Length: 130
Image (cartoon, rainbow, N blue to C red; front, side, top):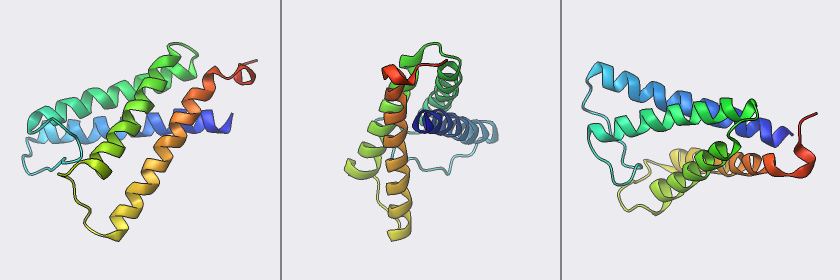
C-alpha cells in the first residue's frame, strides 16, 4: 500500500514539476534552456512535449487514486523510467556535470522504478480497496 501511495505521489509531483517548468518557459519566451535528456525533440517542441507529459502525469495520478483508468498510471511511469534510463544514461547527448548530479539522477531513476513497481501493484489481488 505504501508503494502504491509513493507511485501516486511521484507521478503527481513529477507531472506538476514538468508542466510548471515548461509552462513558465513557454510563457516567458526563454530560449536559453537545455533539455538534452529528452530524445528526438529539440527547440520549442520539447517544451510542448514536457507540458503535455506533465499534464498526463497529473491526470494519471488523480485517476489512479480515484480507481479509474489504472493503466494510464502504469503507462506514465513506464515511459518515465524509459525516458530516464535512455535520456540520462544511454543517450550520447547528455553529459553529467559532476558526481553530485550523477548521484541525484541515479536516485531519481531508482525512485521512478519504485513508482513503476507501485503502479503495477494496483493489479495485485491483495491491493484492492475496501
